[in-house]
Image 1 (cartoon, rainbow, N blue to C red):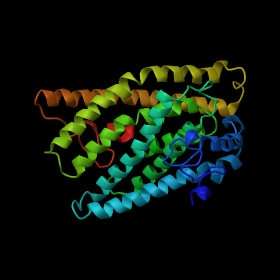
Image 2: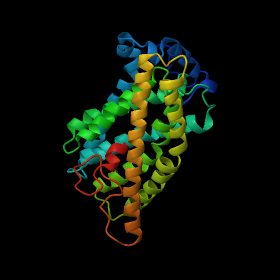
Image 3: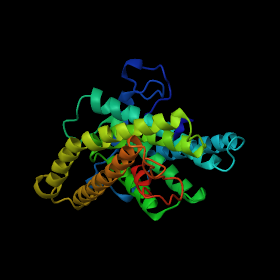
Image 4: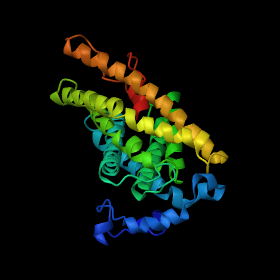
Length: 318
């Protein structure tokens, strides 16, 4: 089945050529990605046939389908214990599985792999993979935004569509060098946010797990989305501005300039969001340490109609 769903040249054999496999438990030899690289045009050369190619969408659609099935299974299981919030908890737990996987890939690629010579137009097989996973994850998010009552909000929809579009463009040799950080490393803090919300929906606010998950999210938020955010974002802006104004090969390529402007707009918007979320997180942590009432959540809730003062933070973060 995997040989059919994945692009041509992929292998489903876990043990084949184990020294060149990452991750080995999925069985994707890195050498097989050479076929994908040769068949993937640069973003500036993309035509409609490339956009509609099954090879480009197969794994992402498979991820969305698998997450949907997992959610439905979890929902059935949770419905016996927490019938009113079964859908919400199932959504969070399912999202958590995907986010953990992306975080693992992102940290592997960002900290352990050799840096790409050309992070804007170069190709990296693991970066290609994380873009596919992120695209499938955002397809899943968008579908259930409409299916789970109380989940839909326009700003959340725009976030999912925007992020999915960036992941798709990155499949075509564009800004793959930054996929590890922005689609992987950053998601590490989201793991604790998802755990925090799952515990909250499960009506376990009086447990130590609720306190611990909130504390770990607050700490990880400032580590990943404030302190570590600065330098990669600075480098990213340098490269994108070069594409628009300086780069001698691509400056006259309209498709490349459009992509660079899109990525710059996304980066600016997300950076402003990070600053806003940081303020909310700091306020709630301060109140908690002083014994004052908080807004009921460290950030706001992506998966419910929250009326507290934090009602936009975590929705956009995911």
